[in-house]
Image 1: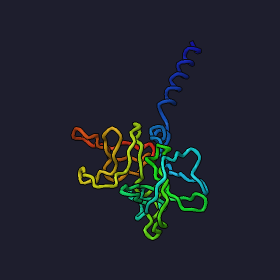
Image 2: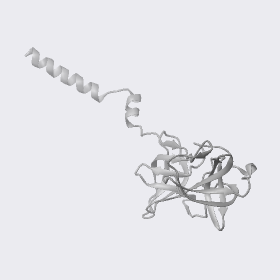
Image 3: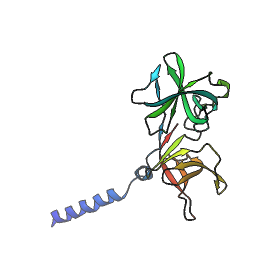
Image 4: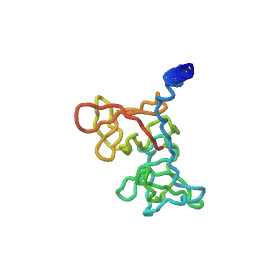
Length: 203
């Protein structure tokens, strides 16, 4: 009988240990993963990085700071013929200034632009990685979105800032109060726009 009672006490005591814990421990168990911040870097010193696929070479002019990636001082809005390229990231090929204009941060493909003149440094964006709006987002459900540089609409008085694959859009500013950032995501149907977590942001 003593052995049986002892086993019962141990079982009860163990269950108490499992069910209790400090508030800090419980919050840590429930906390979402932190948003990952990634920096797009197409250039190594003096050359395009290995793995970057050059889909074409054009000449053109970079006439203003990037609207798509407003937190990078090396990101520009450029034009080649009648085509706007934004963002284009400044680097070097040998000793010559070169700009890499990617399709999006998930693709290795870039168009290399040879500028007809040096980009206007006085008009460059102010550095603000991790603070300003990112160039692109990846939601926790895997949906990918990129910043819209042209005229857009508004939802609840907030600008539609990102267009997403499959039709959703992201509106307004980002909520950075938690380790995992959040944003209002409009599914494009129904009457509800709710916050969703951001797994990755690209600058």
